[in-house]
Length: 184
Length: 432
Image: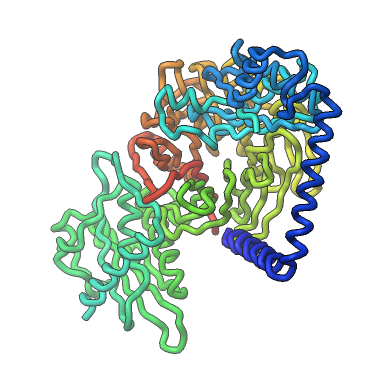
């Protein structure tokens, strides 16, 4: 609806005015309070990490007792945030399970961390059925993380069905790229 | 003088079409012996240039059904505008079975236009009907569609659906708001944006009186169902559950909305009462249940379920809750819409995993499936209110386009968009 566009434009305009107002009227104060807030934040975060984790090196994801090789393995596993599926299937590959164990550990170490699991399907089949299929894939990952001990309130499942393909093509390769769950 | 106006009119017509980026019908398959019909350019008795070319809209409407062959005006021996000027031998000579003539004038004291038309049977040399329709200039296209409806019904015995509308989803990632819900005339003309946003839109559906639409929007971060009044634009979010909320379908009386929700764990069919906002669970199965639609009498829902491991069509009686499987042939049968005869359903069908998806007709009595389309990735069929055509979405290259096919499979046409992807067409009910 056009109203929506106007609404959004007016919101953008209002926000821009707001920023401009902040910038011009409170220049000195702004600088002071900004740096103050920044210091407080980084300070408290740093404190939390150090006291909570003892030997942790600051990245927050590392645990004590891990060898360098284990840490590399964990980092590469956590870098995996997109998981792919076979056509009309929602079962997880063994590689996906291995990576998800590390994601589960990270979530359990940091109870304020939340994952939004976005399920997607390829374009074959009807849109509504694919919406259901995308949800089932995201739920497969949700359940696997829960079985590892992750609290359900850290996880949210969303399905986009076939509405947001990575690849708009119709080749098998494009379809394979689109059948996925993304951790956001 | 009149010729000058006509030429001007033709030139002007091309421009708005390009600006609006409207959908334009391209016939890909028509009937073997289309009925020849002469639509004589209407006379414009006023000054200035009209915004619509009535006779051209009528000609295109008739041609686009695939059942008519309008005669090119350059071949016409005479161009009558009323009964006194008609010489039937001119039209017999051109083998035209029917003749439509008319003229347009503007009331002297108001901005209202008067469109007078007359329709003739050439072989019987008989005036079949005619009238004067009054409207403002912005309604000229509506008047053209109305005349098309009457001509179509006179010749075929079937009520015309040219005055109806189509809804569709348009995606254009080049736009600031890439997802749009648009409404256009049934021929793709006069597209109008009903909603646009940054998040996907799905599954538009008409209320039975054509005043409201329901659809799915992801604007809240997940799929939720919205209802919108077309004329006022007033819009309301109907669901606010977790999980999937989608696939709205108005009941024949317009009071209830069948829908899908996975709020209780996995997708099941629910009915939302639009007056009380009570929601009632209809199916309860661990498999996917989705795509509900109503039987014409409103006593049952048909839906897609994969409870037998592949998607198949089921029916649930709303009183007894008896559930019955309706499709047995093929490994993918989905999104059924029942025709008003209660015996035939339009479905998306795939025979086996090597096959493509086809729009097909399932005859319930005989249990037969007749394939209507063989384009790529055919989906989202929607039936015209006169049950003559099915509009559906397919893919051409990497682009989503709309297509239509007659229920007997004889006529096919494409309705490509000038830009972006178009999909999920929904044909309106009769609107008057």
